[in-house]
Amino acid sequence: MLIVLATSPRVAPGLLSLAAWRALRSAAVVLAPAGHPQLPALDEAGIAYRVVDTHAQEAAGQDGTAVWLAPPGNDPVVPPGARLLRGSADLPGAHLIDLVATMDRLRRECPWDARQTHQSLAPHLMEEPYEALDALESGDQEAFREELGDVLLQVAFHARIAAERDDGYDIDDVADGIVAKLVRRHPHVFADVPVSGADEVTRNWDDIKKQEKRERAERAGAAASADPPSALDGVPFGQPALALAAQLQRRAERAGIPAALARLDGAQADDGAPGDGGGPGDIGRDLFRLVARARAAGLDPETELRAAARRYRDLVHGWERA
Image 1 (cartoon, rainbow, N blue to C red):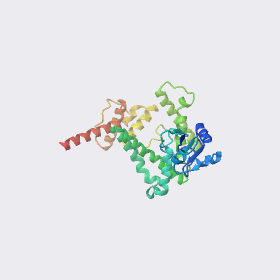
Image 2 (image 1 turned 60 degrees about the vertical axis):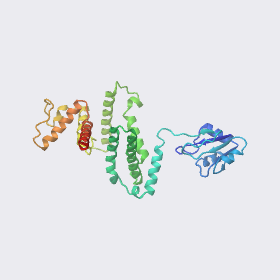
Image 3 (image 1 turned 30 degrees about the horizontal axis):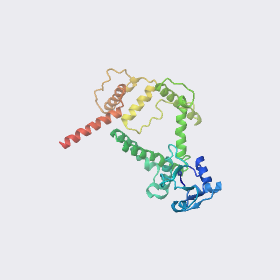
Image 4 (image 1 turned 90 degrees about the vertical axis):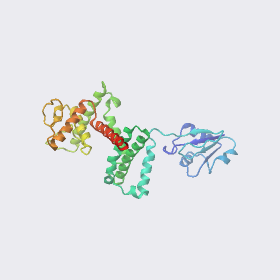
């Protein structure tokens, strides 16, 4: 009888299932290709094996059970009459190890990848999320999956550069940081804080963020005269203007800041209509007010403008075809 033992290249050698170890210990012969990563573990366990190119002839003339250590990776070919035994399997997310290994090799062997820096990659860090958003809006899930990979590449690339520069972190530190943040900001999941619904989750999230900012300021030795933490701290001003306006208004609203301030003059809103548009400053103010109107209607201004842009594109295409 032939047992084809399949293992994952993403699991450390020797970390095999109990059934796999039993099969290896009880086999009449263990066969493996040269350089198989499990061979040092077999040596340590005192299990004899023969290095062969293929299991076909060796197993055919063998009395008793033969175990073939298939090369790790894709599902191995199982001959008729043989049994497949999975000695180790990937956990969810294990394929991210392949991304890290691929990125490491590209930095060593590809001239273009090797010369990139945080600064040279900055445009891609901005462009890739927009390409993913465009794919999502198109409804093409295959394209969206591919673009998400491009976004993920930027994370892996920057983390690899940071590790080389001895900036104090690598890809594992990036993952540890976001996991710690998620655990810290979800006490209703990872601790015993009760919540009544999504709104209370949001309020707790904001309160925890404020506490984190205070603690960071204390660790940094901020002077007592320094400006107190603001609800708008951390809002990136490099994002598109409509998205920036919407995020500023969302932050202010959640902090209890009067919505009337969105008029930019502190006055109470009348009918929410844009102003006279007498100059460049008035146009900017009117746009900011339109953002407030969209949010009051439960709409995202960036999404609405993008939808209008797509409608305009379709109209132009129709006119061109006509």
